[in-house]
Image: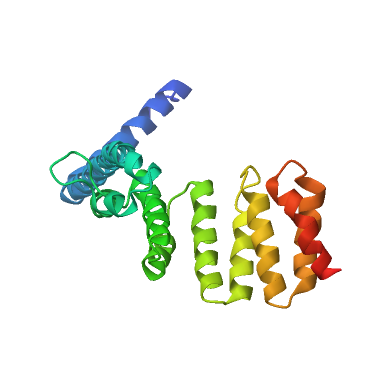
Length: 228
């Protein structure tokens, strides 16, 4: 005699499905445990590597900042060669050494700008240009300074159009940079020397309109007279 099949409740159906999924998951893990262990191990290595990288980067940046603060007294006092080389027998590391040790950190990148400026003051223009172009930090003020430094190099080489373009680019890196009108003035001067008077006039008019409190504003009329 056939017995009536018992109808499963909704709860029992859910429990049955859960058991089925659990069994499948167990079988998958059992069949692929070697591969899963490799994946898990690889992931752990990546996580540890990322943590180590971030921590190491932070420590390097702090060390570079401390070294930079020690050498700045030499730089500020016009002792540019000493700032480049450091002071032997002291804890003052030179700018070149700071870059060698910590050049990939943010403060190490900043050291490149001070190194470049020091070379400019010593009339070592090729070395300065290399240091300016090596800058790859994220600070917008120093990024603009690196572009302006490159512009100065091209002006020195009498490639006035290239210099003007780089000065103009420097003025557009950050709206908050107080040096923007100076960069724009230098761009306009080099545009004039390159025979591009319209480009120079456009920049000078912006200075006259938007930067009335700047030193560049007081110089702008002199150069506007040359392009009108």
